[in-house]
Length: 214
Image 1 (cartoon, rainbow, N blue to C red):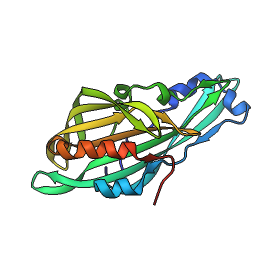
Image 2: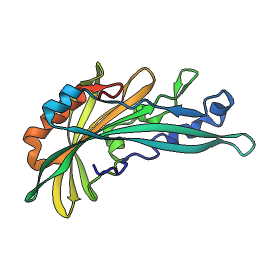
Image 3: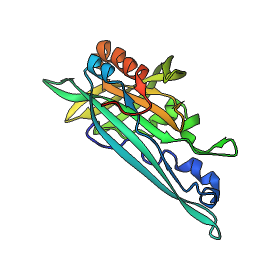
Image 4: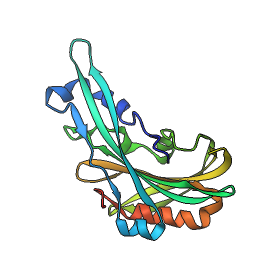
């Protein structure tokens, strides 16, 4: 993807339930650790780590009498691969790892990403394809990410990329945990390269790391 953040505000709705208490007990800022993909898996699949972005969400929670500014710093680690689009090869295959902090209080998790289904996560997408529509769920399966079993869903969609109309696949995994964060992955590629890239996306998911490997 061309650096266009596809998640902005993923954690806001859950933070509203905190009603100002995070700031009172010193929990007014939460920062995730950037997650990535093992270097060997990137090399084997042909994906290059291209960018690590911060996605900062700021929200005032609580009442007028008692309110706090809560800041959540998420990280997006982007990977790209050149595949055939029209007559040319372009970096139209993309794999993104999102890490977002676990936000807990008294045993309760307030980051809504933890409970989001793949369909709900897709609603947060604003990817590098200039336009995307007609998103439809095609299949669901299980996959192991960070030694945890989770659901990965494949969606089909219509998209426009650099002036070309494309049918694309979106692969979205539901959240798994690290010690301090929640991790979600998303893979996107033109459907005409599904035979190769679906397997590659699954390999990247299975080789996600809790921190970035150079």
